[in-house]
Image (tube, rainbow, N blue to C red; front, side, top):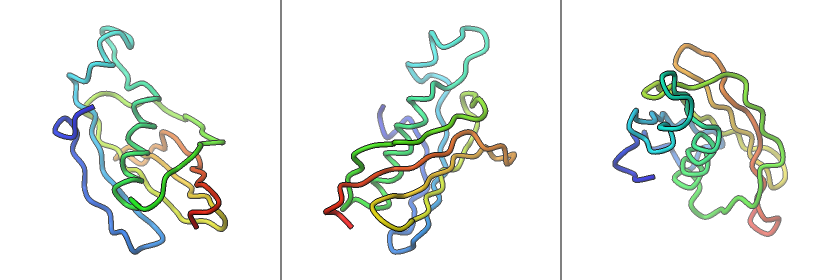
Length: 117
């Protein structure tokens, strides 16, 4: 996925919280076969954006897993959404993805290598 195809707001790196706004364009290659006539953004594309936003916020850390992820609502192409990260204790960061109307799309947790905290 090219950075030019997505619109992002840069998060503040020093804060224990972060918010990043994203939009998946209607011409994204994954949408062609993901329900023609009524496309929705595949979950893996949303998770890719979660990882991209985390890397922009905390480039010194590398997630090694997502042990818990729940998808709660669909996302349509060109529909803006916000990714929020909250630092927790231990080598974990919680995340939530919400549409602009407030509907939560996904929530979960990133795990970092224990030696990175």
